[in-house]
View 1 (cartoon, protein in one colour):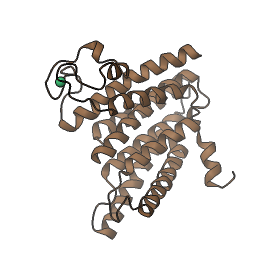
View 2 (cartoon, helix red, strand yellow):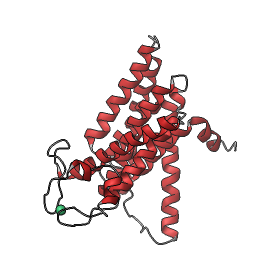
View 3 (cartoon, helix red, strand yellow):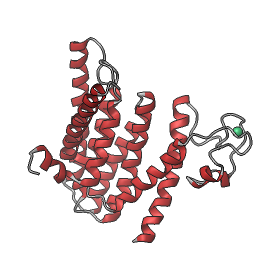
View 4 (spheres, helix red, strand yellow):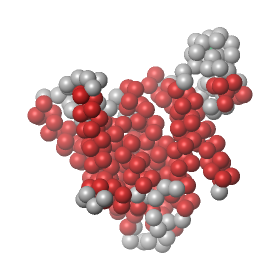
Length: 269
Ligand SMILES: [Zn+2]
């Protein structure tokens, strides 16, 4: 078990390293596979031994080997956090796949949660939920549910129907919300990215998981705004990256399962 934990952690850190590439290159429209990493300041190619997740940052003391420009601390943090997110899938209890073997929940969990983490960072930094990731993740999620139907000989396609309808619902809900919001406030209150993110979450969590994620996202965003205003960190009318709350909620519902949150919704603590 410990070996497997460590193994997952190393894989997670490498995925985190890739997430770093995505969040730095996607916003400037650069390819994420080519060219290989180089220092943005002096353009020196980064050698493989200076590109190891977490370790290299500390060995280099957070500076480029060639020009000594500072490398942001966010690099090792993203790698570490992804490592932990991936490990935690050993203990994940996603309700939709609770009847399935653990390799399913681990594998699916790694894909789903790293996608959500990447989107959360991009929405936080740029108020941007790239369509290529939300729609890509959505297709992935629906294919995953179809795969489970097929390996279980469920030719009624229970899982597929669940995830497809959840995606449809998730998208429609936020789409209508943004239309209504626009009418009332005369400006966009919810971005189109949120509708696609919500469809993505539905494709992995199914109907009930999606409901709980949306509920949790509104509650947590609300609490965040209230505290932010009390401590005068947020101004009235300030834009909030709602995708961060949606992504975080989707992850929490995946890891803990629906039951925990249902208890809170119905105050059965
Ligand atoms: Zn440099």
